Structures are given as C-alpha cells and as structure tokens.
Image (cartoon, rainbow, N blue to C red; front, side, top):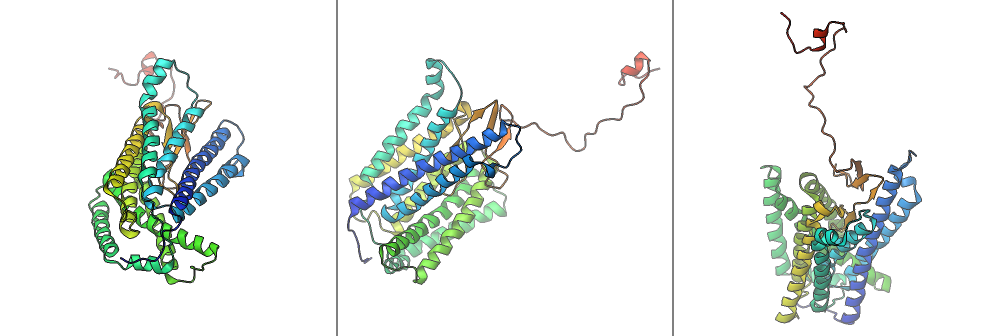
Length: 383
C-alpha cells in the first residue's frame, strides 16, 4: 500500500511518545491513589461531606486529566505497538504505591516469602518494557486525513474489520442469548472494542497534533468518523469491563484484560498502520519476547493480590490501571462494581460484607413473659 509520508524524525518521535506514555500512566496511578486517600480520610472522620468537596480529591482529578492527556498525545508520536504494552507501567506504579500505603510490618524473611512473586513481577515488567521499547517498530507516519483514508479502504484493514465484526457478533450472541458469562468471552468483547478504540484514538490524536502544528485536519469527514467511533467504542468497552468486574475476580480481570487488550491493540497497529512492515525477524521476535515478559510480570503482580492485598484494579479510560488498597484505621477501600465508575466503597476489615438474611426468614413474635421456668424454653412441649 502506498502511503505518503512520512518517516521523518522517527527516533525522536518514538522517544517523545514513549516518555509521554510512561509519564501519563505513572501520573494516572498517582492521581487515583490520591483520590483513594481522600475517601479513606473522609471515612476515618465523623464529618459527613461528599468526596468531591475535598481539595485532595480534586487535586487527584486534575492529575488524572493530565495523565490521560499525556496518554492521548503519546499515540500521535509513537506506534500502537509501543504505547499499548506500556500500560503495564500503570499496574507496576499502582502496586508500588500500594506498598507505600500498606501499613503492615513483617520480618524480612516473612516479607520476602509473602511478596517475592510481586517483586519478580516488577523485574519482569521493567525488563519486558525495555525490550519492547528497544525492539519495537521505529517508523512514524504523518497521520494526515488522506493517509488515514488510504489505510482504511485497503483490503487488509477491511478484512480485519470484517473478521472482527463477525467475531464480536458471535461472542455477543453467546453472551446475551446463551448467558455465557465466562470471563474470556466478556474480555474478548472488551479487547475487540479496544482495538477499534486505539486505532481511532491514534488517528484523532495525530490529526489534532498536525492541526496544532499548522496543518488543518479537522475539516475532513474522516476526523468526525474517527472521533465518533472512538467515543462509542470507549463507552461500550467500559460497560463490558464493568460487567466483568461484577462477575469475576478483579485481579484476574486486570491481568487477562491487559493481555487480551494489548494483543489486539498491537495487531490493530500492525494491520491498520503497517507498523511492522519495515522490521526484520529479529526485532519482531525480541518485541514479542518483551511483550510476553510484560504479560507474565503483570500476571504475577495481580495474582498475589489476594494474599498480599496490594491493590485493587479500577476501571479507567485506558482500561488497565490499578488502584492500591490503602489501610487506614482498620478500614479497607475497595472499588464499587455496581455499574458506576466510583472509586470504591467501604467494607469491613477482611473485605467480606455481611450477608443479609433471606427475605422469607422472619423473627417469631415473642409471647408475654412469665415466671414459669418452662416458658423460658419455647422449644420444649409441656404435657
């Protein structure tokens, strides 16, 4: 496929996009921790005040906006194959912040035994991120409207979208009609929508950056099409991810969602933007190795969540961030998976909410008190 443009300043653009993605993911994790702390602080006081009336929560919200803005702009500079796997940085940062706020003192031997796999996950995530950034695609195409249209009407993209639509419809049929609420089915729906989201985000971000630089791209119809698809796919993606968090363990959702979403995002970048077209086999194999190492690292970090209570995943715009569990005055803050995207609700110390009594069980009426000893035993029948 012929495309204009475009490979100028590849190393510099990749570096800018990579740094923006890392900075954005770290900033989002910090912001969610700050907002979580505001909830904990309010829960530990007798003051009845909404969380959005605190300065702490609003400072976290500002950091969230800045982090998501950095993530959004990073798509305009670096390939999808590099930006998408770097969401593991958010999981890593959230887990580390969980250690900082986790008020638990253990002996060095017990600490190493309990958290050994977590630290191994840290090493794997850092090493995998280094490999995929070093050996990832180094081509950068100017995403002007004409180039995006050329990619969109090419037969590889049309075939990919056709297969994706067919697969999505089949999975949606089993999920809605057959009530197949399996984790893999729900997260495959999320990942398929996510591949559309990242494709459109990269196009919208690229055209906005070019417009800011002086080349107007917003008056082309393809910009409106990409923008609408970006918003719609992100909304439906968040809805399915919320359902997965309701029905399944949140740590498993976080790891499996990261793996599937990253895989389809990289595949979308390879098909739509031809990111690996100029790469040799060695670079591709090393990139795949780095991605696999990142997958394993994220799995190890999230797998030990139940034992270590390090962090709870939370649904955010980039769909792979985590939120640390912060202990304060015996209380644990956990996400509320009731369908809304609030940051959490209070539960008891062990994380188990008290089970309500069944509706059909009613307390038997108490009869009048009497001095007769036998009346104190209603289960004994008198002759």
